Image: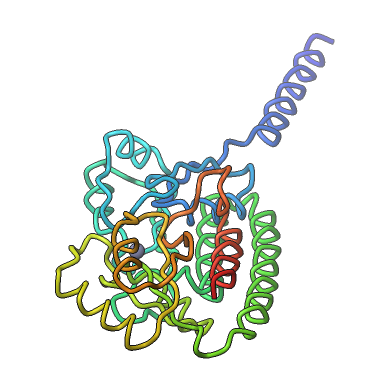
Length: 287
Ligand SMILES: [Zn+2]
């Protein structure tokens, strides 16, 4: 009788422990280098991931200086998601200094890089690589919940495809002479190649570069000779350069494009897909 009771309690305890495990499985600790990747990880991982973002909303990852708080987050991460393609030049040192022991994934792996340009997320078709790479690493570190990651990932890919088709329809209506605009740094090369809008800028693909007087003179000549109608400021950059170019050339200020970071949760580009919707709507409004 006694033996039976003990065995009963033992079984009950086993059931209770495995039951608790299933309900309260710890979320995977993920660190994402910047907001766009963090959003992708959250869409794919839902409540199965706990995401920390290093470069926050409206932040500039090119010029970022990691903090001790970042180092602590990275040291505790199971997965570290970065863009790669030379975007986060500071990451390798941070990962080493923090003693990171988890899995690092370059979300852009598989993308065809355009020159030295790291902004591959500005083409929705490239995001399919990002989604696949993020999904793969999550299913590897958390195989029990792999089906849930794969399902969320498939939905995400479908949403992305639908938005890509919609954007192509919208932009197709623009006449060729209205397809040239100015931004502050060269962040829209992939958008340009994918959707047929030409972006000119006074500096290159790295926002850290100083704008020289010669750069300004060149871009002013270009705005005049090519009849560029609109200038856009970027959420991560100082608007002064664009404002000065507008004064000098008479081109219109066309609003704010989200290039290298999402907005805060209350802003117009709080998710990766909303960033695209907002940018295209902003381009169409002025053009
Ligand atoms: Zn950039």
